[in-house]
Image (cartoon, rainbow, N blue to C red; front, side, top):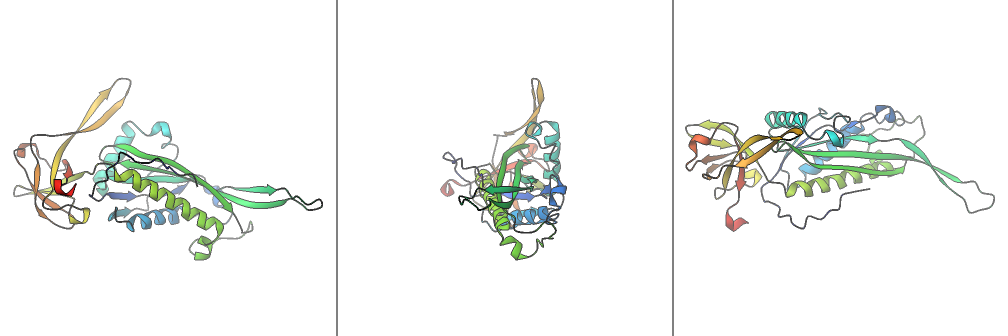
Length: 294
């Protein structure tokens, strides 16, 4: 399995938990699924991603959707920017509320023959039927509207079934086969890389309700917020770039901090300190840990 092993020497992971949206991983070429009838492989891959993230302490808030929001052609490397990306990020943020969105597709599950030459004089060469597995994985920060992770994973394994056999992908026997284990190991490697990449990204939330001068933020105790923490207000602005699409940036508003007055499992209530006129519904804020917790 080819994985990203770049060390994060300068990374200081935050204690605030991340919110992740897992979307459906579709087959780039469904015709490749004919051998073995692996048409629902993408569903199992998506479920595996969601299960692995839900089982990690860094991601207590994981949403899985059955919809595939990626089209392989539009998510080529040269298309991961610009107005379309900003539109997609805004839609995901406003619809699901998760900061990070996991995208991807299964690029290749084709079969091939591997020939091993025999050393014996009168022995025939050994031919093994093997199958590729190539997975493309992206992570989009829906608040900052940019792709923070873009990796391709490839491996291969023996394919032990004949050409007419229909594999039951819901049966554990398939996942214990060489090919099944290789697929799971590839997904696990991607989960590890994504977790490392997201760990050092800044955490953002939104003001989702205003009631009696109380501002409700969609982060709470389950995300690591305490009453000793505070929030920093940000404003999103679009900056023109010469000969390029407009870039969206988030700039901090430095006039004051937003203190946490009450806390629930999923939300916090904050008070403003001198910036009441600047606060609006759906404004973006970032949690700031108390110094003793850093």
